[in-house]
Length: 104
Ligand SMILES: [Zn+2]
Ligand SMILES: [Zn+2]
Image (cartoon, protein in one colour):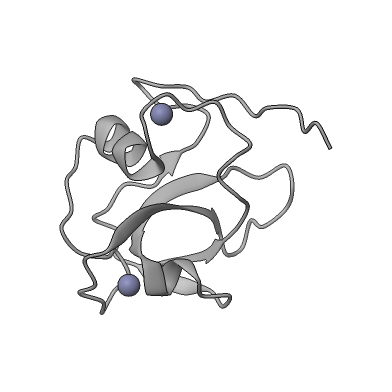
């Protein structure tokens, strides 16, 4: 299992995939029907922004992983099955979103 924590918001990157779930699917080459949390079978998925639980610093990589809306709102860490790829947000194969400067 991989321990991750939900971070950040969606608006700060110029991803052109349409949404982050699409971004994950395109760049991971994987397709999921269910939430990637280890015991969850939720199907209302979003591409969640997460960091590895032991690498939560500003400078550490942010990844996308599909999670159900319930887990996406979870403030605590969660465990995802390692068969699912964590797609690093700024180093996709098909799309390389850049972090946009905040306009305040
Ligand atoms: Zn994208
Ligand atoms: Zn879930």
